[in-house]
Length: 118
Image (cartoon, rainbow, N blue to C red; front, side, top):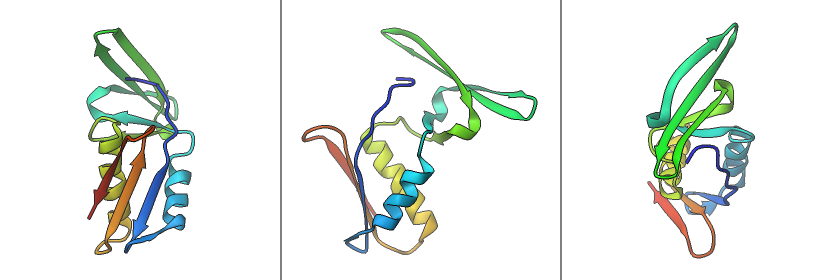
């Protein structure tokens, strides 16, 4: 769904130890941004020097649309489910630190969450 918000706890383990510096890096990267699915990206618009993304999504509840400054977005190759986010975060941290074993724990509510490792 477009423009609904969650604040979920994410734990990042580097070599089986909690890595607060990497958690901080991710929190800073994602502060005040929209995580948008590439599949829902309808178009990129340029007005002067500013790029905007227009997202569009159709669901049983109706049609949803959002236009937002592209600099305030991170595009995802999958939906923003907790399972897909854990995998996405794993890819981000592995690209920063290749060859290191990471485990990502992403929480969403009571008894719901996901783990990605590699």
